[in-house]
Image: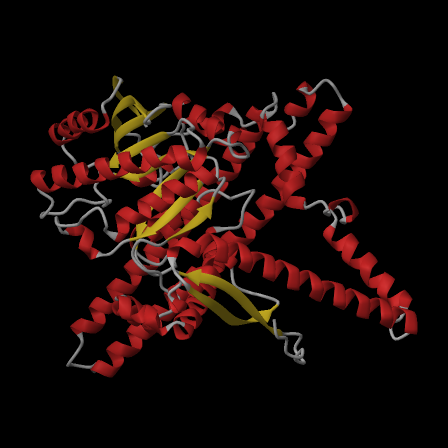
Amino acid sequence: MKKSKCKTNGVAEKEFVFEFKAGKNKCVLKVPLQFPVQLNISDLHGRLLLLHRIPCYIEDELKASLSRFIEKETTLDYDREAELALQRLSTGDVDVNQLTSAWARSYTETTLEHARPEEPSWDEDFADVYHELIHSPASDTLLNLEHNYFVSVSELISERDMEIKKLQERQAAEMDKVMHELGNTLSDHDVNTVASQHFDAQQVLENKWASELKQVTGIQKQEYQEWVIKLHQDLQKSNNSSQINEEIKVQSSQLSEDADSCSRIFEEQPLLEESFTIHLGAQLKTMHNLRLVRADVLDFCKHRRHSSSGAKLRRLQTALSLYSSSLCGLVLLVDNRVNSYSGIKRDFATVAKECTDFHFLSLEEQLEEVQQVVLYARAQRSSKQKDQPEIQKNGGDDKSKTVERNPSNILPGEFYISRHSNLSEVHVVFHLCVDDNLRSGNITARDPAIMGLRNILKVCCTHDITTVTIPLLLVHDMSEEMTIPWCLKRAELVFKCVKGFMMEMASWDGGISRTVQFLVPKSISEEMFYQLSNMLPQIFRVSSTLTLTSKH
């Protein structure tokens, strides 16, 4: 074996010699290797066989000899470095105190018992206190207080809407007069000036109310959290909590207001649903619950000023499971812009603003964080594509062009998550990006929206979300092209794909029972609904069925 001198960067080249016989011929293989060896021994062995055409009958012998050589030379290098380090220490070239300090610091940083305890977080402390109180007799008091705050914010929003409506009506009348005088005493410039003034007035009024709502919700959140902490401390000091619970209770007159006093009240409508029980799995079967529901997607989010007993129970269940391993999720189909300015996103944001979130950031703040994460992810992906240009050859040019146009947008099939404590039946909302292609009837199981559902179910398995609501037709509203054959074909595709994803769940979470709700729009007829309900047990092989018509 011939050795070369060590280079300045600590890499040394050594020659590996292997002798073997091929028939009557004696062959010698000489290969230069750089130490320390960075390659896997199996990979290096495979390269040698391929490059030097080594006979297969000496394959094992070559690998054993190569392993012994690398192990021996690596040990010799370590011994040589250790001897040089001891020599520098004995001659005084290294400061002993500095060396021991570095060792001690490295040990304490990598050993758990020497790690600093985590400082308590206000959010974590408040979560623990709330979880304890909501599972105590004080839960009714907490929900009453939350309902009081919701009523006050709802009334404030009603005043805002009324004032904005009056302004718009007054501006519409003024614009009609201006248009009537157009060409006589007024010109196009005058019309544009009036329209600009109207726009500025609307912006000033909307900003005024937005600022007031933000201030009110901020005060409510601070008061609520302080009150919860104080209530918990008082309950710990006193065993008799009846007097404390009397401090704040919603008056019965406040809960029995006239239903026509506010135009923002959401009337309860009949909810058509059908429940199924299924068992999925190859060997160890897991029981899951399926529900087919005809309702509006925002019905799972809205609070009601005049709640029925069923709505109160659902709200209590949502509060009880807020800090638990049984969370509820909802899939909301959105466009590729991370904001709340239009469509279903604006409607959802309106519902989320009607009640103060006492536990998490507001929806606007969460969306701002998502936008920053999206920009960071796009920058990382772009840098990787520049380093590996062959990725561009595999298709995806359209996607890269879309991202280059606006890197803050997300792609179809991608989704972002928002957390909420102020929605009636939902803790987590998955904002799944979809495009207009879903309105056609020729999507496949590889469509980005379908793969997005798979990733959402995987997140549910890894983050304790045991109930998830999915739009069955992958649309929230029906249109003319969505005929009965279109609906049946789309439902069959989603049913089969979700069944396959649910069978994968066993490998994701070990086989935990979950509830999947398939949501269809309210405009679906009862006849169409029952056709879908007949299709579901055929695909999932249902064990039992329960049909319900109730109030939501």
